[in-house]
Amino acid sequence: MVVYGFRVLSPDGTVVHAEGRRVSVNVDPETFTSAPISDEARQAAMAPLGAPTVA
Image: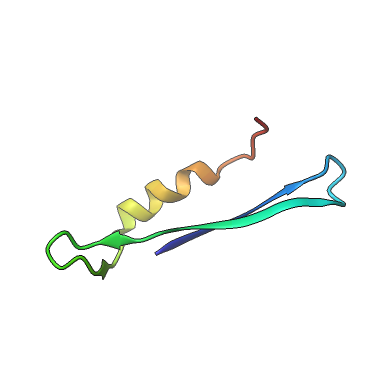
């Protein structure tokens, strides 16, 4: 399982406009139960957490 937490802050960082989290779970295709995430998949999941961007 990989859990991402996030906040949307005001430009000065004093006001939290939104908070949330997203959970990614690896599912075994045969049993439909959660399965360990490989190191390779975990690294790929963490890649978007590089430098913050503003959209």
